[in-house]
Length: 41
Image (cartoon, rainbow, N blue to C red; front, side, top):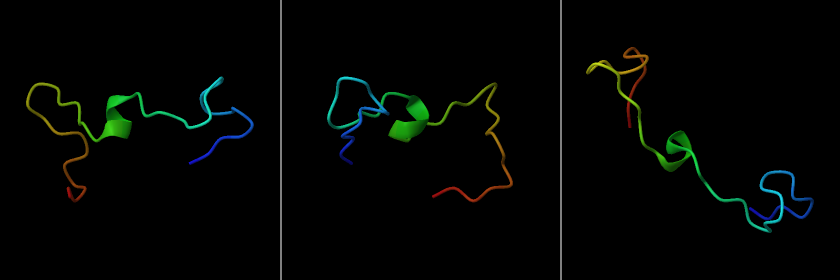
């Protein structure tokens, strides 16, 4: 995705993923999945 106005990552032409949710990792607390009713892929 090209970002010509630098709205997503100022100073970069192509935005980078930098949060664990954006990279596909899931944060688990005390062995409990968040929203267990949702289907996982």
